Image 1 (cartoon, rainbow, N blue to C red):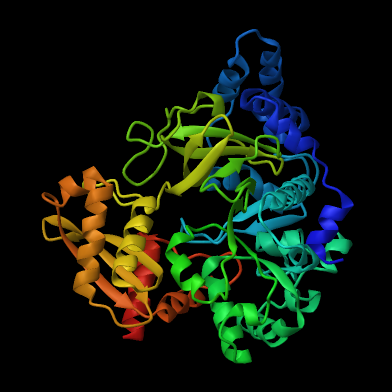
Image 2: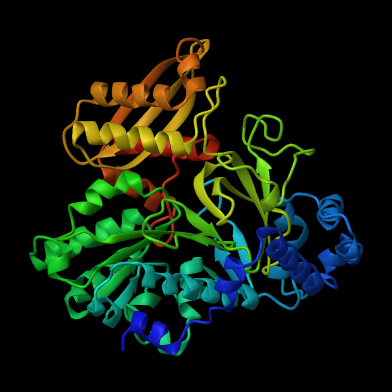
Length: 514
């Protein structure tokens, strides 16, 4: 029996799911933090920040005394502070640094928010938690209207190479490559592509081999980044001379995506299908499996409150963040039960991989506190606020989607840069369209929708943000630049906002290609 049916047949352990269904978010997260602190109390990090004194507060009568002590003892960290002070020792092979034991694997982050890649520790405990959360996610497929044949089909996982790099002390690669390589043998036998293709490090070669073998597989579900999955399906359709992907995979009924907003890709995706399928969103970051969509009628994802991660929420406003998206030293942080619905927060996480009060870089909105549901709204550093316009990635995605619908075009990629314009400021858009479109009309439509979506933007367009520039480019230019900086394939995404070194690299690439 193929992978999906096998997982369901083996029986899902529902204890974690039932626990989250019938336990308050406060109790779940209090318990999760307690387990994390107990596990790491004797690590170098745990001794430095006196985890024992925090644990003492768990017996206090004050509802949040333990959390206040946690915040008082442990400072907020970003990648640089965790890496420079702690994780570099872990990579040197030292045990018990910020999590018990030695860490064998490190996920190579796609680095969309910074100039270089990041090495994120992936412990055995994290791999175990990702498996458990992934299994809980697959169990939710029972809520979807899916035919019996779907459960007899396999899953195509379009991710990084399972052939990891070795430093001498640890293995590193895409998180997808690490986790796929660590799947139980009974699952590996049913997932696609084959183990040989999964090990392929050259992304172009991997795509070619998948395309060549696609007709041999019975695929019911695909998981991967939208841009690369779209490219793969286009190539399969062309190679095998069919009208749509369902002529190759008739039982394809679900696509699992994450890491980037899907809406800009939906129109192009739909044109590759023979019939509608379910689009299911997940929030699987290099730091852990954070949330997933658990039913077909929702646009939100359920936050995993008992999955090896303690979550904190920092109101994403000027009080807590500067204009470059850097968190202020006195930033306010909240537990989930202290948040408010429909307000934007930056996410901090403490995990079973030894990340502590770690600024993951994403911003979210809590849309349903009772069911612990969130949506991702952007990145702390992927927004534009040159002069107070406070333009979020969520605003950008919606404006581009609406403009593309109006003009009946497909926009797969886009990015925006904020630039000085004389004594004032301007936004320069680069939009990927494989076809003909009037740049001026597209610019005007995106600008108009942004004014409707964001009052601050509308105000600044009358004052300091005088000009908007837009350039339409073939999508291959975007993917060519990603390849030029070593970010092709796997879990890599094109950054929606370009700043500093990445902007310089992009402009240099465009000049070379001109």
